[in-house]
Length: 289
Image (cartoon, rainbow, N blue to C red; front, side):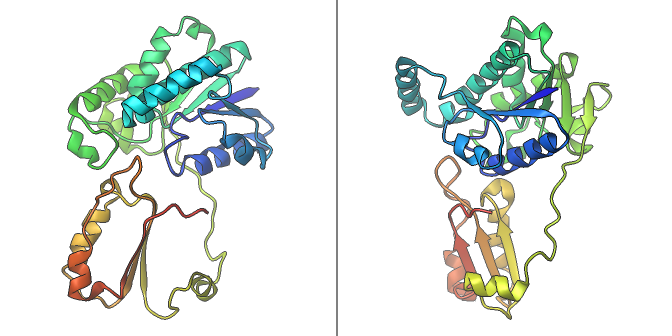
């Protein structure tokens, strides 16, 4: 059996490379052939270190097409990153699966409407087996995902509509029961709930030693928010709460902002003036595992 893992958001979703690698290694450990597909060619070395085959959409483009895509990316900005590029990756994954006799395409974290559009337009889809992981409940209200990339009512309507149509054509996976229930697709036999698995990293590092290595005071109690610090993660809510309590502990907000993510998710200046200056630490950059 040969499984193709396709993550359309590999280029911009900060945790996508790690999640994709862990899934691919798990499949490989089960004795199943696996190939990873993404847009950028730069991921080949990263996955190659773990013995995972990687095929890049970018590598397969001729010079003329690369230049044309680069021009469109410059013109469209985030619309290219979040919509055009993922659509290209999905389409190329369908082509690759057809040409290489792939048994199953595992589509990780795609936007439902892009999957539906590519699937219905692809002429040889009858020979393919596509499974898509739907990570969240798309709703008609764009405020339900405040801080997400390019939020708009039209986009959420598209995804809500597509989510309810996709089970007619492909199998969907959700990592909890909440998503299919909210989307109204929980009765479909092609919708499956498979909880996300994670490595157990509990107590693998001594806390005191870890703080010393990072230059963090050993004794004070610490609250850590780790990941992409954006409104969708609740970083702005955390700052509002801190305004109402005394700085009796340290708070570290660690994660990349700016770039393709919203750069303004809260203003810490009032906190600094109210006694949090020596207790609130913001590390606004990507920190590797």
